[in-house]
Amino acid sequence: MVRSTYPDVEIPEVSIHDFLFGDLSDAELDTVALVDGMSGATTTYRQLVGQIDLFAGALAARGVGVGTTVGVLCPNVPAFATVFHGILRAGATATTINSLYTADEIANQLTDAGATWLVTVSPLLPGAQAAAERLGFDADHVIVLDGAEGHPSLPALLGEGRQAPDVSFDPSTHLAVLPYSSGTTGRPKGVMLTHRNLVANVSQCQPVLGVDASDRVLAVLPFFHIYGMTVLLNFALRQRAGLVTMPRFDLPEFLRIIAEHRTSWVFVAPPIAVALAKHPIVDQYDLSAVKVIFSGAAPLDGTLASAVANRLGCIVTQGYGMTETSPAVNLISEARTEIDRSSIGPLVPNTEARLVDPDSGEDVAVPAEGASEPGELWVRGPQVMVGYLNRPDATSEMLDADGWLHTGDVATVTHDGIYRIVDRLKELIKYKGYQVAPAVLEAVLLEHPAIADAAVIGAFDDDGQEVPKAFVVRQPDADLDADAVMAHVASHVAPHEKVRQVEFIDVIPKSSSGKILRKDLRAR
Ligand code: 4UU
Image (cartoon, rainbow, N blue to C red):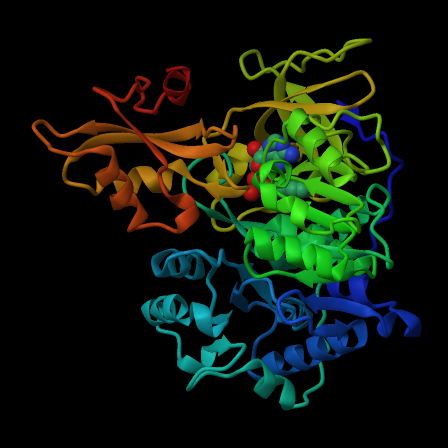
């Protein structure tokens, strides 16, 4: 067992709201918390905390509080911060939904999470409305921030002028958020994260990443995903930085916003790093304000990291984590320039890890020099989830009785505590940093009348980025080509879940218990 090389940090026993906003000084209150990257509109910390209180008050007046779960289907706009922290301030739990989801996927998550309210924006209302109807929500339970006929709007709710309620709960057990993750296997599940989990992970980032009040931080990675939620929405605000929001990635807009708002920290997933390294238009923008590009959510290639650092004249660094760990487990401090950027660096404070040989169940030995043999990474710390909502079996498969979370990722470690992810045991696919669950795509494929059997794994595109690939067994005499397979899936799932490669095969390799042998498919 290895403990973080960082000294432990104190984790305050408070709600995430009090941790982030409880001790804002007068000077901090008048600085900029959020900038709408599209319009340039700014929100100060004073305005933000005021709006959070008013939104929490409006929710409380409607009976939303401890025990209520509210769905949040909203792209990155400054009001996301008001809504998210207003829900938590009211004592309710937020289940954040991927804004690319289809109506069915939205409905599935709302149902599974037990949500009774939904907050969205008018461009996403068609999907939100269809989902809300399936659940039988009244129109007044669907809040449309920018307004829509028959629905409460953000200005109307804030305009009620209500005070934030007095709520009391135990931050170490009360659920703050329910983001969804498929974990090691199967369909997306609600990840139960407490206020303490969220407070802990921000506290664990603090001694490692040098974001401060002088920084402008680009928030293009979605706040609904744990990376954007903790590292941008919570950590950057705790550091009193200014968050510049972008609702969706578009390369020219991304570059324009960096140049115009002089953002100093840019958090990305590897495909954005590929664009920064390779795309010709990057040279047309003044990116001189960028000090650090931070990559996470999928493996970062070392050559790619150097190419970005050289082209932009900045530091490139990376972090590793997962929804189930709030998310940060390993981070490379931007200041530790000696650490190889294709590694994930040391464990964050207060975190312990083991590398366990999946065959023998033994811990791998940490050598006196060089790197260890690979083993499955197990982690333990205050950022580890309580479990999956209503899924005791899935929880106990991943989280053992001693508190070790079995990540499903395979890593090596050096004698001085530097980790490197070298493989993945679990079936999860990362496409542009988003989760894609093979089980979901396999079910969609099997609905097609010309498909007898199917399996989905991660393959790689020309840039070395992971993409979902389907192996398909045709029904006898069926006339089905790859385009038809891809079109079928595309019509049933969100854009990031599309199957992007297809291979026809005679039989899907399976174990005697009927489990797909993904290793064998990968080896082909
Ligand atoms: C190789 O993607 C995330 C969390 C991302 C994150 C975490 C801490 C980014 C920055 C940060 O500081 O969560 P999930 O739940 O969507 O996906 C988790 C999985 C991991 O189990 C691993 O397989 O995503 C993969 N992954 C990575 N793989 C995440 N980060 C990395 C990485 N290298 N740096």
